[in-house]
Image (cartoon, rainbow, N blue to C red; front, top):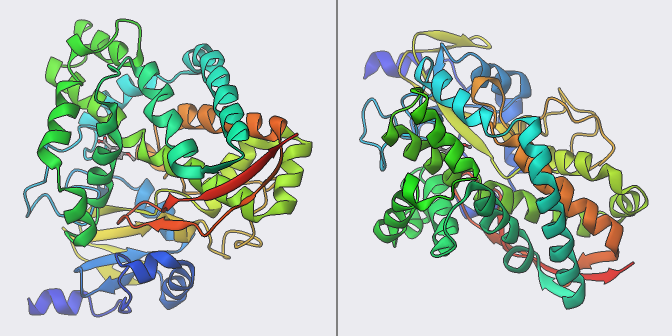
Length: 402
Ligand code: OVM
C-alpha cells in the first residue's frame, strides 16, 4: 500500500468527479483544470490516473503494448474484477486476438461496401428530414437522432425487426458500465437480463439475413478465420458500439447547428460541408468522452511515474478542446481542418465503424442542409446522464422548409 501511495505521489490530485451530474452539465471548465494541473493526474476516489491533454491522450491510445485494452477499457480492471459481460473480443482485447477480429470487422466496412450502402442511407435520410420538416417542431432525440441507428443500421446488419427497442437500453448498459458502478450504471442495468438475452439471441447466424454485414462476419467462420461463437461476439460489438454513439453524434450535431446560426447558414449555403460539419461536431461535442487503458509495465507520463497494472482514463473530449492542439478550441467551426480529433479515438482501436458513421452523418445532415431554411431550439434541452457518453435525453427543435 505504502509503495503504491509513493508511486502515485508525483501526480497532481484530481478532486473533481467526472461521473456526476454536476460535471456532465458542463465538463469543459473541469477539462481545462485537468489539462492545466499536469500531464497525468491521480484520482484517489477512483484509484486511477487521468490524462486530459491532446498529446497524452493520443499517446495512451496509440501505445497499445504499454497501455493495454485486455483488462477492460472502462474503470474496472479485469485482472482484479469479473467483467459484467464476456469481454468484447475486439474492444477489450490486444493483438494478436484484436488483429484477427478487427480484420474481419474492417472487411465489412470497405469503401466498396459503403458505396453500396449509400443509396439506401441517402433515401432514408431524405425521408427522415422530410418527416421532421412536416412536423415543424420535433424532439431531436426521440424523433430524429434515434432513427438511423435503430433502423437503417440494423437493416444493413441484417438484424430482425422485432425487438429492436432493446438496442438503446443495451447501449446504455454498455457505456455506463465503462464508468463506476454508480446510480447511472445501476439504473441502466434495471432490465439487464431481458435486454442482454435479446441481444445475444439475435447475434446468432440463424437470426440474420443472408445479405447483410452480419452474414459477412459469419462468412469468416466458413473461411476458417473465426469460430462460430466469435462471430456472434463480433455481431454483439456492432450492436454495442454502433447505436448509442451515432444517436448522440446526431443529437449533438443538431444541437450545435441549432445554437450556432452562422454555422448553420454556412452549411445551408454549402451542403457539401455536411461531412466536415459532422467531423467537427465529433471534436467539439463528441459522444464518446473517455476510454481507459491498463498499464502493462512501469511507465512515465510527462514526468509522472506510473506503475504496472494501473488504470488510466484518457479523456478524448478534453483532448478535443485542448488549446495546445487547436486554435479557437472552444469554437464550433464546420470549415475547420479537424484531422487529429479524438472523437473516434486513435491507434489500433480507433473506431472501426467510422466509415459507416460518416456515411450516416453526411447523408442526414446534407439532406437537412438542402431541405431546411431555419433550425432553432424550441425549448430547453435536457441532458442524458451517462458515464461516458455525452448525450441529450430531449432536444426540442423547430425547423422550417427551404
Ligand atoms: C464492443 C464495443 C462496445 C462499446 C464500444 C465499442 C467504441 C465497442 O463490444 O466491442 O467501441
